[in-house]
Length: 343
Image 1 (cartoon, rainbow, N blue to C red):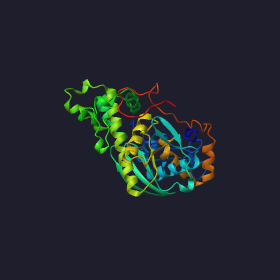
Image 2: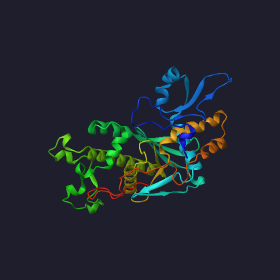
Image 3: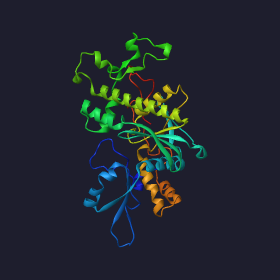
Image 4: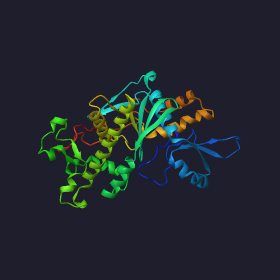
């Protein structure tokens, strides 16, 4: 499914590009013209903060009016549409293995949708257009990118992610084994490899920032934030008795280590009773939701589905690629028990 053929752009860009309007959705051919066919007024569906922030700029520079849709409405509508319309949209990613799930449409609701953008929103979805934002955290993609930029001098979000492939967080993170002389703390179920304190070794090391490798900093930072999101997400699912937790948002970027870390966190805190679920098109929920909203203006649901399925992308690849280490192996001194593969 090639969302580009639908004129859909990704949702909020963690790169912080000033020229980016989040969750942009275009009609086939680019624009819709309202009213009289001679009217040259071009209307584009848009959602997210960028739709409001850059609305006047679009109108002034391009003569385009942004028809703004509510961001949460679009996120939920996009997720619901993908889970119902796209074969093998959802999958688990554990120990480097991606496993697609067949979801019964009659048993889809309720579920928790965790959208990871600059911050994180956790949305309890009970049905079509029935949802509630139940929690969230300000520690999200913007935190990773902001701190990473300050600490590593990386110029782009993707550069920071790529750097994390090469790092070893054990250089900076304090593990249980570091505290207990290399031993597990078995009485409370903590292995020696469990992180006791993210960035904790920087307390006792007689080092300055420049003494640490940027790739190790990036790895530790990504691990800290992904772990935190996974834990908070599971606790909210537990709070409402939800069986499914879907993670979306452009922060994930098909990044193997991010998904592995979130999965490990959900598995750890749930004692194996819950699994993190990911979406092949996690960066397009808001944009697709804005596109689907065209049914309010003459596009029915069947037509939208037909437009989606006209895409030439096969079900096997789904336009999705797992980004991980180039040789498909972790370093010997890695501190997470999972594998990272390029698929």
